[in-house]
Length: 214
Image (cartoon, rainbow, N blue to C red; front, side, top):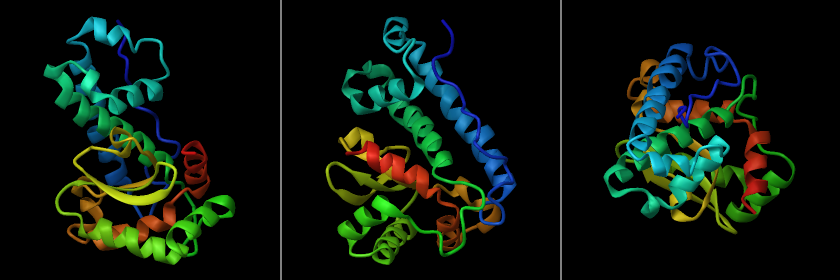
């Protein structure tokens, strides 16, 4: 059977997010870390050919979501591997699309319905940004911080490679705060990485995720 999961190509070059996120970090993050999640996920799934067949032929994102939304249905001996590596594959695939070259500067903000929904939920975009940044800066250890939706918008954090799908919510925007996402450029200055990340957010992609969360 062919490999079910594969490493997606980035929608931009490794150096496209400079100076906010450096090319060396992007290359290691994508080609090494993300690839490792994909490889280990495939290794786990291949231990159960009949289970793997239930995903064969599905669009990859659909197969991933089915795994992560119903982890209890995954064979017990590979459940932790699927949670960790399947989560890592989904989270990173989502993360790359949330960013774009030349997205803007500090003035890079959502527009249209996306802006309205955020303002309605948090009072203002600045209030949302402040709260999101506070949670991302203060998250202990490795994990992610998300703008998520389940009929309403809220900010949540997840440890390791967990994500909102496993809790019944939809991810709308997410930031990776594992050290490998920023350490080559920022060392221990996570807050500086987070502040610069706001400049490369692809708000059009966020708006699509918001629409799909309804």
